[in-house]
Length: 229
Image (cartoon, rainbow, N blue to C red; front, side):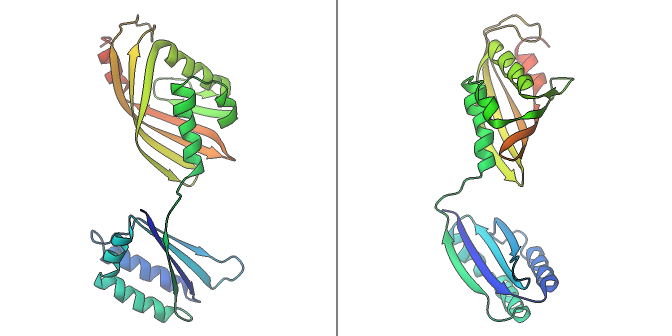
């Protein structure tokens, strides 16, 4: 279970605290168990800060706290704060990135199930699509429909998502596509062959909609498996 430690502190020396954290990261390289750290400033109190430190588990957090550098960093941090920092230990019970859920509707509902109506729900009207196999980018929802329908008419396929990373307004997915060639594809008559290729797609989200997408995949492998090369 993911574990988050919330550090609540007051300081009039934020630059010094940042320098301290930078040194700590450098000194514990390869041994710390922290997954991510995010520092936020209280908008209503400019000396009030929160540090959200994420660990893969409570046990990993305890291992990290026993590093000598962690104790030394904490002592130096206390000296830079007005008062003792407050710690809150949190077990994460729900963790979802809404942009990731949006992106997965493209794979699950649109691409694999073929529900074209979902495109209106998840894609911006001026959605911009970049595809390694298309020399000309597609703009708008209709362009996305054309692409999906072309792939679905040529293959029965699935996407297997191996990893996803959401950062700010971008979601990156590493996937494997597996399809059975049932219809004409790029001038190649149906072969009945089952093919696969790996790829990565990056979607940019804006105002709860997919705004832009970049598709990179092993198109050469697909053409070889279809016998075109």
